[in-house]
Length: 97
Image (cartoon, rainbow, N blue to C red; front, side, top):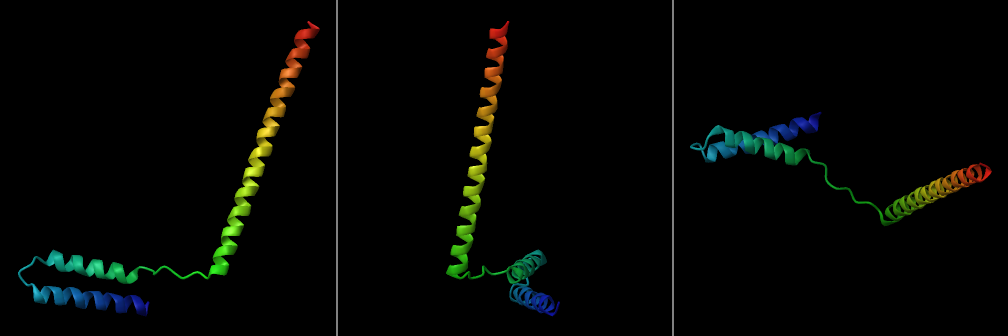
C-alpha cells in the first residue's frame, strides 16, 4: 500500500513538473504523463529464472507433451480398431443373409 502511494506521489510530481515547464499545453497532457509514468512504475519486471529450474520446466513440458501424444495415439488406435470391428460385423451380417 505504501509503495503504491509513493508511486502515485512520484508520478504526480513528474506530471506537475511537466505542467510547470509547459504551462501553455493543455492539462490533458499532464494527466497523460501522470498515467503513463504510474503505469510504467506499476509494471512488474521480468524475473530471472535459474537455468536449472528452466531446464526442469522444459523437461516437464516435454514429458507432458509426449504423454498427451501417446494418449492421442492410443485413442486413434482404438478408433481404428472399433471401425475394423464394425466393418467385420457388417461383413459377417451380410454373409449370413
